[in-house]
Length: 322
Image (tube, rainbow, N blue to C red; front, side, top):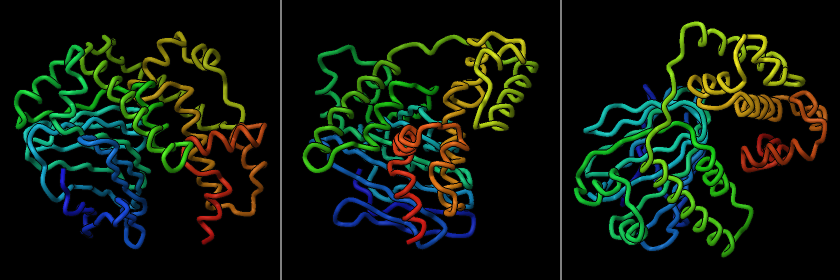
C-alpha cells in the first residue's frame, strides 16, 4: 500500500496526516493524540504500529493506492470500534488481543474508534509474491489461498482474542532493543505473528455456547466486583462461587463479553487506573500509586506498566509535564 496520507476524522473535524522521512506521523496538535509508524521489515512486508486516542468518536482511512492481492494481518491490542471495508459487512471489535485479516482489494478501508478509547494495534502488510513465498512450503489456509488466487476478493475478518498473537504483537510494539537488534527482533516476531495468524485462519473457531441472560448478568456482577477493589480483588474461585458458576465457565463467558479472561480484564483495569493517576495525580508517589492498584513491589508495577504502555510510569509522568 502506497498511502499519500491518512485521513483522520471526528464528526466535526478532518485532518490529513503524513509520514515524515523516518516513517512516523505524530498527531498531537488537534483532537487526535498519538502516533503511527510504518517500517519495511523485509521486501514485501511492511510493519505498522499505531497508538492513538481522541475525546470524540474518530476514524482513520488511508488515502492512496490499495493494490489487489495485498493482505493485512494485524492484532488490536486495545480499544474498541469497528472495521469497515467496502464489499464486506462491518466488523466489530472490543478488548485487546483480537486478530484481524483484511485484503486491500483496491477498495476503501476505515477503522472507527470509540471516544476516549486508547487504540493500539500492530499490523503486517504482505505483498502477494512475498506472502506466497513464505507459505508455499506449508498448507495455506483457504482464506489466504483465496486472496492469492483473486487479488480483488473482499476479505474482512475480526477473530476472538488470541493470547499467543497478542503476546507477539505486544513484543513487536514494545521491542526491548534499539538499532539493528530491534529490526531483527521485529522481523522474527513478525514471522511468529504470521504463523499464529495462519494457524487461526486455517482452524475452526472453538464451539462455545451462547450466554444466557442469567450468565450475562453474572458476568456484569463479576466485572463490577473487580473494578470496585483493584487493590485486593477476590480470587477467580471466590468470584465464581459468588455467582454460582464454575471458574472455567466464568472465564469463558467473560471472554465472550469483554474479549478477555477475568485476570486479563483485572490487569487492564489496573493499568488504566494507574495511567490515569500517573497523569492526573503527579503528587502521588509511584510506590503509593502501585500499592493502590494492587502491586506490593514497585518494580513489578513498573515492569507491568512498561509492558502495557511502552514507557515506565515515571517517563509517562514526565511526558505529561513537558
